[in-house]
Length: 236
Image (cartoon, rainbow, N blue to C red):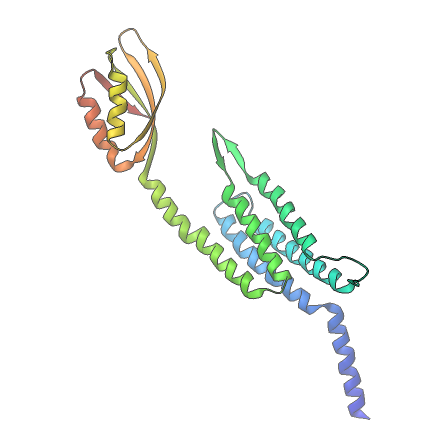
């Protein structure tokens, strides 16, 4: 009599566990861990979409993917055309709106593209977890960390070597001197654009936007101040 009662109790316990959907809970927790890890890196860097945002997006995408697969499995394919990819497509579209909100245009430059791309890939990680593609989700998270941490340092190193300034040159009103200054920047390897010229009673004040190697800056300044008719070179 003991064995049947034990078996019956085990069956009831299994039914209770099945009702709690511990497998789904595991997937949601995994999505929270992966999305939260990426969000924590964004939070440390002071980005608009930080820890909670990335965590919620990843968990939400995993849950929606789970519901999409579950609904498609419940219905009869002969009676209803249930496609799990429909909800997945809507997730991608919805994340696009969130990503657009993180992109800010300021002074002619666009910032926030990396944050928007991070939200997009975090949603993809959540969808992978919801689709039981755990290896793909974890592997993608590792790649995202490499892109956000290791590659950002490489990018910062390149940016530090890059020199972008507005240079104001005070010169005589001599024919061809504006073009000579421009040629000096070009020969030093800079990209140069004459943005403003102001004529004063005795001088001409010209503004140039330049970009190039920081190592070439000292050399081009020496060349400019040695040119006849150049009185002052100032970087802003």
